[in-house]
Amino acid sequence: MREKTTNLVLSRRLKLFALTFFCSLLSLQAMSQDYGKITAREESKNSDYRSKALSIIKNDVKNSQEALNRKAERMLLSLPLEQKLYDEGKVAIKSEIVYDTLDDGKVEMNYLYEISYNCVNPNSDSDDYPSGTYNYSESNSCRAICNLTKRFLDEDCKNFFPAGKDIDILITSTTDAQAIAGIQYKGEYGDFRYTAVKFDNNVNRLTLFTNDIVTTNAELAFLRAQSVKDFLQKSVDVLKHTNNKYDMETWQIEQVGSHFRRSSIRILVHNPFEERIERMVQNMQATDTDIDINIPEVADDNKDAFVLIIANEKYKYTFPAVQYAGNDSRVFREYCMKILGVPERHIRILENPTKDEIQTEGLDWVKDLMKVTKGAGNLIVYYTGYGIVDYENMPYLIPVNAKGLTTTKWAKAKAEEKESTSLTKKEVTRFLEECISLESICTQFDRIPMNSFTIFCDAGFDGRLRDGSTLFTYPHNTGKTKGMKLRGNAVIFCAADFTETVYGFDDKQHGFFTYYLLKTLRENMGDIELGQLFDEIKDAVSFESSLQGKQQIPSIIFGGKVKDAWRKNKLK
Image (cartoon, rainbow, N blue to C red; front, side):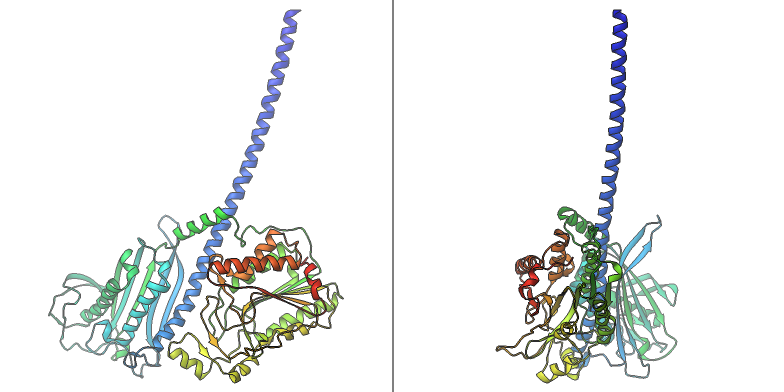
């Protein structure tokens, strides 16, 4: 009996052990699955961080292309008369990211800088080397591209040249077919013994000592390239901290004329961005508050909401690109869909539209929608770009095709290397005819029933860029002005007062206003009254911009119909 009881107890214990072991296995499996999910989420998040960092870097390089050409134009116009380049000549600058596949199959992201000079009309006067010369400073065009390169690499593009990186530098120099008539080499670049030289696509050996007589075009073209190399080595500071490999290609053009005697520079920086990307990812991981990635999605279907986004980033004439405007508008669109729950078909984004396109493809579209929704519609308009105010401080949006500033006065200001130009009251009046009054946009909807009408305007109207530099100045009425008074139910969130400067938030690659608009919407999942939304944006923008020495205080304007009731409205 005792033996039977003992066996029964052992059997029960074994069953209990087996059950416990089985449950433990299930628990471990569940933990493993949870860990796998967490790991997958972390990997996805890190991938998003890296994509964001890459996007910022690509945008930096993209903007540098335009900025370098704009600065080159100003610098060349400001040269002393004896160094100026003829109108028939053109300096071409390339600043871009290029990709190269390595031997192990990995793809390397590199930075490419190129600069060259070309004379459009071969029958015109030329800025290239005079006959029989080889020093870069004896050619107006070569001197110009060398000095521009120093300025750009040491100032504008220095972030693309980290210390210790491998750099390939190719200098191309040419001669024409004119026979050499005994040119003495002064020894500025040292002696050369059996030096390999690539001339006319063939590798030759060249020997040249101080006080030797240059007798061939191969030797002359080599000295021209060597002169540029000497300048880069001695004058460009960022190249003193990198691992540089110089190559030279020299050619003889089978025609005669100074247009065929020139030099160009090509610089390729290998993998210059990886460390910066890693730092950016680490910063994002540390704060985990970047608004551009991991945007949460709500289940709401905000079917009565309609959104018009006007993104004026690239202007066709005198204005430089609006800093971060493209990123502002694209991310705002994502927030409208994911945070506010607006159907994608209810959102229209106009990228760099003309004045007519803003009306016909944008405002007319939402007007028709507001009419057919019969008072139930909620309209959101977002604008980023440049603005201007008239003499009475009434705000106008500047379309990308406005060209009122492409005047003789503007050209003269650039020739004198002025960062801005002063406009008369008459010139401003003429320019405003090409712009769109913000008040006129609102009045188009005065007689159309709708539930709400909200405008977010991340634009400066004071003639300054987002970096604070002045683009143009013009007279204002410093006394009491009538200002903009709205009759309808529009509510306008302004990035700042119309006479104040609107800045970019460089660390976040957004305008200050748009960054904190999106951040506040995210923190509240879009479920926030407009009054609280404005108060939080105003406090955050005012504080952070002041910390950075760029004080910017958002303001609000609302129509007579809505009065103070706007504060209780919501975007969804």
